[in-house]
Image (cartoon, rainbow over all chains, first blue to last red; front, side, top):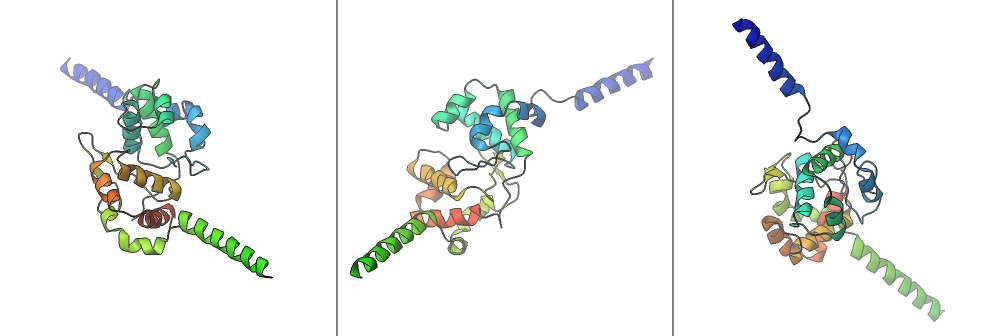
Length: 109
Length: 106
């Protein structure tokens, strides 16, 4: 009886661990939400013009931090502010995961 | 004849001004990196307060964008205590050189 309960709990724990977290960013969901971003930043985050920064390959948590800073008004840019206004934290996390998964920026010593 | 010389001189002056405004020297940047590498030169280095996050990768970024970011830190338009302090001590030439260094992928 006890063994059966433990087994069920084990299955439940595994399901929780393996299911995509609601908070972590998901690159596939991010890609689906990235259409508007692509107009300036390029399809994979490698913007073709210096007017807009490359974001492909950037660290995921740095991208999320920057997006949240725009959303909270700590970082000021009229274009970015209006873009992130209607996006949830989950949307921003998904977008950060998508661009971080793309090739582009590299670490340079 | 003299007029042609004048035209050449004007053309050369124009090219030179353009080059020095946009083009930084990645080699000259080597002597100016000391303030940068403590954070940007450590792979995956994390900083920030209260939220901690990775210091951004700069390799391959558009040099013009890097210059604008440094100017925004210097003017206080963009806030980050360490970046404001460091950018505040950089000249336009320093910024161009550093941007040329980091903007190049290699």
